[in-house]
Length: 158
Image 1 (tube, rainbow, N blue to C red):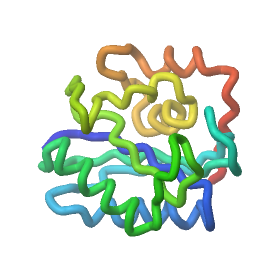
Image 2 (image 1 turned 90 degrees about the horizontal axis):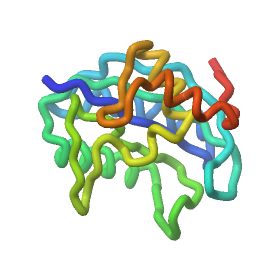
Image 3 (image 1 turned 120 degrees about the vertical axis):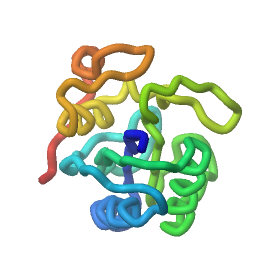
Image 4 (image 1 turned 180 degrees about the vertical axis):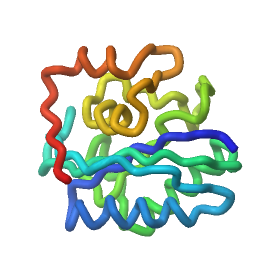
């Protein structure tokens, strides 16, 4: 089993319900165990218009490959009505594969760790809730990276 972290976000419809439903669905992926889910957090969109997001991070233990896990995440997004009309468009559900063990990978389909997670407080704060010693492969300690995002407001919702 490989430990993987998934970022979860929504800012369309009942965003809280989409995020919670996604957590339930992650728990039912094949060859995967939902190890933990962070609290829910609210944040303003970054580099995009639209309403505030509800965010969380899920910790998974999985036997799926990174590509298989990405396919499963994108299938969940589609089932929740995710559309991609333009970059950073508002979304019913956004599932980002943040890390997959210590894997560092760059391919046309997938970059690990997620290429912007180290710049996003709405990812780092819930990640640190799950693992206060978390590190972003190739970037350093998540706690140090979060300090560099101090200008981004993130509010714990539950």
